[in-house]
Length: 227
Length: 195
Length: 213
Image (cartoon, rainbow over all chains, first blue to last red; front, side):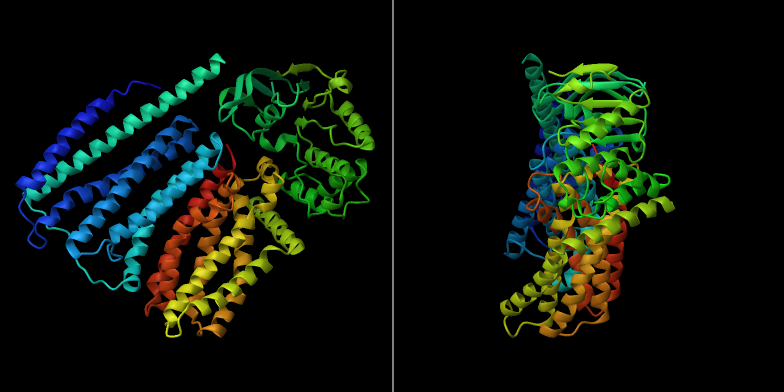
């Protein structure tokens, strides 16, 4: 396993460039949304962050599957790091979504916001993932259980989404409506740039954290063999 | 070679329970594993049984799960079931042929026939250990792993076990972990001392 | 194939026999669910709707299930017996299926008391609610049994199981309450069926990895 974080600096640079460009586009270039005005621009951060969180959870589940398939322990670290990233971006989704709700409707939280409710459920689920890891002794057993739980998580995403859609009738009457913005040319381009930027940021963070954790493992092993 | 291990290592978090063990066991070998408490004897046996995976090194056990008999530290019998019910359950899971007869034969040999319909919670430590031995031998395993088999046994049980081991040695592959090898050395074909 | 179900039957029989002898889990569940309903009666203001009460019924059952699940692997955990079962040549998923069946049985017993009690304390129950509980029980047993095995392997056990279980039970509660109160229960019952199918298959396939290394 390579300790060199070769992809990291490139991804970080790319993320910086894309995000800078994306924010510039979002604030300066793109026209105001017809319905919601200036406040709609947070959409360009909120949705990419949400999609990135989903991508991280999916990546974590993929690595989990690899672990169970090959029994190679290195996938445990990769799965864990991906899910950690997913939770960070999940929290960001909740925060940006909450800000958007505040700006749009004057409330910090709305149960009819299906995306937000879904992320709340996922946040609870993946927090329990960390509780599971924390309260189990490290080793192949913990790696297996974490992997199985990560797979449950990725299945929970569509199931919860369906549930929340079904629930909207009796959890909260639909008071606020917001149609997804009809994205024409400039909006779509800005959105793509922001999405690419956030994904690149996630990749950079992922590579960095993974390299750091691997370094820890290597250090421990060296210390062990010296003692 | 029924068991082949090279550089076998098992870590629990930071602590190494077992380090750099090499092992070759044939179908009729009797291996005595010695070492002080905490030297990794139980860990080695658990690895051979397949309950633990090695954190490093290679381990190749060429018999399938159903042909391994493992006598662990705990008797691995349900305390609220009777001896008979416990052996019935294991006999079913291990697909033991002529289950009834085999169970009856083992219970008699180990002096548990009279108490077979009593719950294990009413047994003494020695009786529970004898039942554990019955469980281990029930499916006539090709590889026997015994972790300190004499430690919880009473006099009568120890005598029966001595006899059993004498008849099994040279017929099966056996691995015995013990911290007092005295009575077993005569039968051993291999020895492994863990630090 | 018949050997597999023979294993499941033997293991399930063992679980039911153990409960019959110990008699601690089911009575506790029964007492808990009735007590919870009584507490809810006091906690709801008099003008509260039947709908709110139905929601609380589902809560009561979910937490009763949690109580049962916490005890599910107690014997195996305390006496390291799971090792004995895992060593056997039978498919490990048979352990899950057998244990899940006994959990299901206990849950159904608890509901056999809880639903009439609810009808007595609050308001009558329709067939949709019963159907919803039947479907929900399958999902709870399937997912809960696997999570109980995970929690049993950790240090925090009783603390961990609710944390693992509750996020996964949210869709069940949505489906169950929806079927109980909405005029068109079909969608919610179908959703519960989907949940059961998807998570039962996942749990069945992955149980092996939860109990081995």
